[in-house]
Image (cartoon, rainbow, N blue to C red; front, side, top):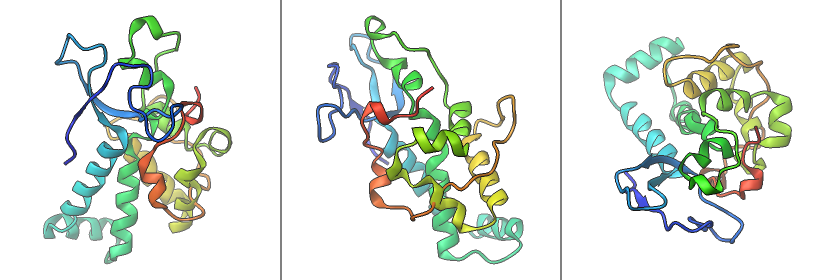
Length: 198
């Protein structure tokens, strides 16, 4: 597991390559009340942790048997890796300024607060993705991995991991991954201007 990192407290608290890029957070702790910014765990690290735990759980024979029973066939290593990518995307909705601003100082807030489940599901809509999801995430390529409706269901289940779907239910199935899953996509290091717009 990746360790929680201390944020610096500046406007560019987590510079990732360029001054205009912030590293999105996935988990935050306000256990340090004297800090302007709380302790944070980067979103990419949290998502990678979840994907790694999923892959490890798949090595358990009981879990593997249940997954294969649900699939109606034996699962290949590629199947498991693809499911791990879907697990990685479980918090895609956190990549929006309304969610990320939850830890920003009140003086810098002029942003409508947002959650991450509805926002993640909204991000799967084809028209929304075309203009708002960072291209290097290659969301459209996932839909080439199998039947579009089933892939959409897997993504919706992953994003709805808090045990409920927001009002409106499942998004319309669309093409979500076309060009594969590049390593660059796992960094989620994108300028705030390319985060999901609300």
